[in-house]
Length: 627
Image (cartoon, rainbow, N blue to C red; front, top):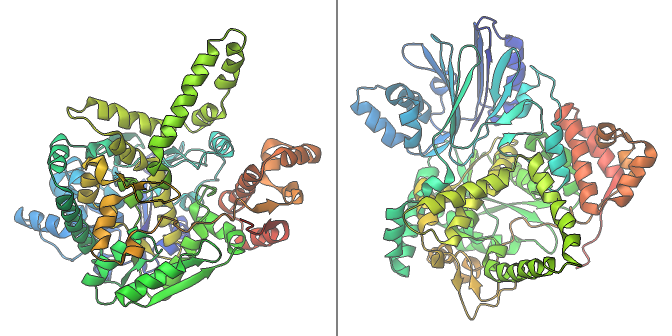
């Protein structure tokens, strides 16, 4: 929805430079092109850029002040239950000057306090409330991390922002060596705690932060993913018949779409052709008379345009299409990187997402409904459908290795190999971000009074790191085009039901289903059963692809590209040593090194993207898809 930035000087006296605050607003303008505001006084500065979707007039511009003039709010996101919260606040005597969720958020914080307010919020948010009397600032980030929030802690000040680039007028950004090491060892990229930048960290999901007038920081967690588990709900959902379960999810999704489609500006939907976005679109089309839909056609053997066109025809909607050529996966790397803000090899489909967001912007749309979150809640990834088979296979392998270790002549040779596995070193470099998520989820499951099925533990695990990466992609590359993504599958009621519903309603044995990815198994069963009520079966039962591309796998980079590069500079390599690195690296590592170089040029140094694009065109090609 918007871009936010704030700075708190530790001495409590220095007035932030207004020219720098304006420069920061310029760097965040894509997140909020409709209006911007700044505030500077002793010890504190705020910047806000607004993408207006609710109460479009200037009365809801930010920083937004309470009636006394003591408290100011800067806010990025949407509060979907703000009308219900407003009604509750009016009963306490609170009055309102606007019809925005912004004012409800500020009045709720003042009436109930942060600790009581945050659990009441259903929405996506990153916001800050300044108390001008004490000089303190309260921050909060939503449960899923849908909206970004970064912090920089320096010797003179503490700053926070929606994007790392917002810190550039205030500090010189430097690389974080451990994060780079983890990335080169195969990690997707940090999404909690540390970042790719020294002294810059991400505020955790479901976390609030108080910055005192001297820059002292106190953090508190108001929600974690295992908090969705509920023994009473597990028992209630277990008692439902399959038909009742489908009815329950149908009602919950309809209610969620109803809440999230609300706006005073034009809202549309992503149309990937997959069952999740198709179902959301089908429900939205019944509630919205002018639903605009948009599709990125990744040209080639993985194109989903046929399914997208079938859906548009079924719903009698006009489909807007942007064609994505293979060269786009080269040419768009610098622009994607500028907004993603760290290497994105984990999500090679970032370019199509950015291009379809631009298409929506060009059609006057500001918000797009998305099917993101369904695969995490309902176990829709193909490998999860065959997990029982693969677990049995690898379990047998582990038992065989334990037996071999017992053989005196062979066993000792295996121990050094095990102990030097690179994934342990990679985990050390990224502070075991994914491993900690998994450990916390399993420890919480073990502590409950009721048994949590393995499949539902997997849902909570995937709602951690993996979902954070997807939401980062959607936010950063949607907001590049001033487009806000909304996620009906991540409605609190939908997720709470999903993570507590019986595993058999997600993954179901089906003896006549010969799907290659997971034979005899129907994934996302309850989602597909709901979709059957709105869509033809050829759409409701489609296999997941999701902007699929093998462009990065087929990408080849000439050795000369790295002659003048950040990796060579970072590791202090001679030309001969550089040659050895490239010659001994597999194509995946070479692409990672390429991304690292573009990241340093565009994000660390702030270079224009044009130079990087030309260099990529000179030294990078994509092999034909021969499969």
